[in-house]
Image (spheres, rainbow, N blue to C red):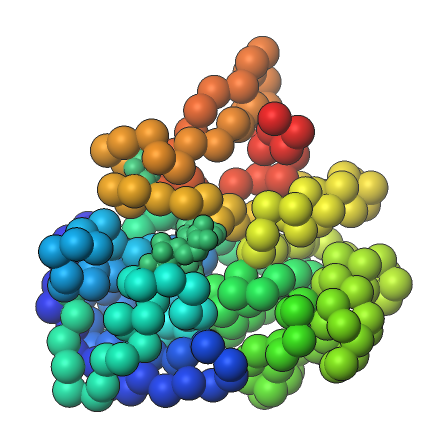
Length: 257
Ligand SMILES: Cc1cc2nc3c(=O)[nH]c(=O)nc-3n(C[C@H](O)[C@H](O)[C@H](O)COP(=O)(O)OP(=O)(O)OC[C@H]3O[C@@H](n4cnc5c(N)ncnc54)[C@H](O)[C@@H]3O)c2cc1C
Ligand code: FES
């Protein structure tokens, strides 16, 4: 069950330009969390009262820790970046549904873009079978060695071609054309739409984690609505990314509205 906790920061360090790797001690969340879920992190400052949703990048149930990798883009994440080991932070979670890994597949393709890559790391740890991981970034791809250490076949794309393939991660997937039975993705909406198109061509329903802007983060407002048309339903309805997602089936998302 989701609830608020005061978590001690075990580690918080920069791993790339404006990107931080934070581990917090929060056994109550670590024992329940699934890959693809997220937590709401509070700034502790009255003027930035809304929590910031951050994906779970790693779960260590034994140590009772949760790992998050985040990019500094505004005041909230800037405040998080200044936290040090020993400080505490208020968090709520685990939130959302996470990826469904109940069905085993031989060939799993994981496609991440930018700051959508972190949740795929915990997913890769939990997936059986072969893993092809495609990591896209503007310039500095993150967590590459950690995916390799899990035995994944890793491909990297950068917008400027400074590392790996020049282009985005979905263009690279099309170039490599891996054998695929299941697709999991997280990243900006435009990338997820491209993943959905590729999945449709392959006759597969991809699981895509949507990154909508959020307000309450717990289903109490409509700040994060996304149009979803479930199989068998005649029309779309507004679902909430924070409560009904963030992971949806690619063929159920109404992409063009
Ligand atoms: C389910 C979910 C999981 C997420 N996981 C991660 C993660 O693992 N690591 C990470 O770095 N970020 C993640 N984000 C995005 C993160 O929540 C925002 O970057 C953060 O809330 C920004 O807070 P801020 O106060 O620093 O910036 P703000 O001042 O609130 O915003 C600064 C800029 O960031 C943009 N922005 C804010 N929120 C989002 C969003 N949700 N999607 C796209 N752009 C946004 C704003 O439009 C603005 O341009 C996730 C978002 C969601 C919804
Ligand atoms: S952010 Fe309020 S309902 Fe999702």
